[in-house]
Length: 354
Image (tube, rainbow, N blue to C red; front, side):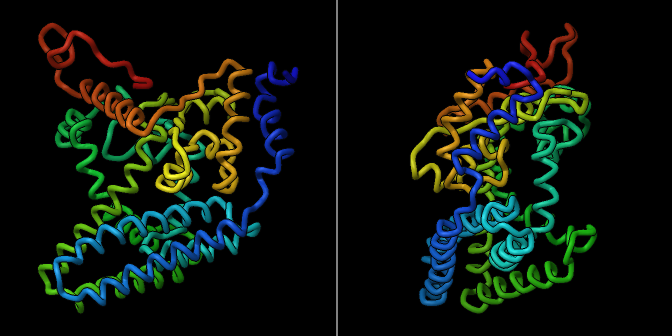
């Protein structure tokens, strides 16, 4: 064991050197060329099938297929936002606006800005936008809630999966709002491509389908797209330690203790877009997706050398942990009984990990 691992300030430096020496930070352009070609081909095939099938309820099958394709495109946009694909920022950005803004109607500029805040402050109350939304991840936020928000918090474990059906609409709304109000770079280009996507999408759907079928198609396709995306995000941090802005732990400990990996083979890697290696991704955001699997044993070994907990579970187990945490925190939003207990239970949940 290298002596440097005993010094907290050099914990990450030791791991970074090992990863660099293994060549795991080098770009994998060939991988992304064929991955992009297959995904773009699937998108074209989906819309070609949509036009060919015509005004039929069989289009709901196409809606399911396109929901999955949209999610795969979003994963590629995610990788471009982290500069995993090309060396230059400009090339990654152009790739991102093509696949993100034009392909699925999600602003790469908004997403990059928002997501970088998450990476800088994972699971940190008041700093991570992913724990400042419609769900409560800490006891303090649950207890301070009022009105409709309190009602949602109280039932958030039950509402979690149904609410994911709205994630696609939320992504589109946030993207449109950002290009109108945020000072993101190239706002005009992003707004034009978002408008082009929306116009092409809606015109195609309403020209081919009757109004009722068109509305149902959009609800199914966009709902399942959001559901798929939400299901890939849920295992990553929900139920892991929730921090405050005053937390002073170093970079490596901050990222490892707030992230969870999901075990699996090639299918899990493809289905979750590499986000199942969440610990490695947070430690090395610019590492190309196909290299994350190779980095995983090195990171796990390094954490073992430090005595640092390394969380890895099955996909089903990650959902159980996330829902258990949401339920525990949600109980803290319930009114106190005369005995001073939360709800009807004698045990209150802790504010940290579920």
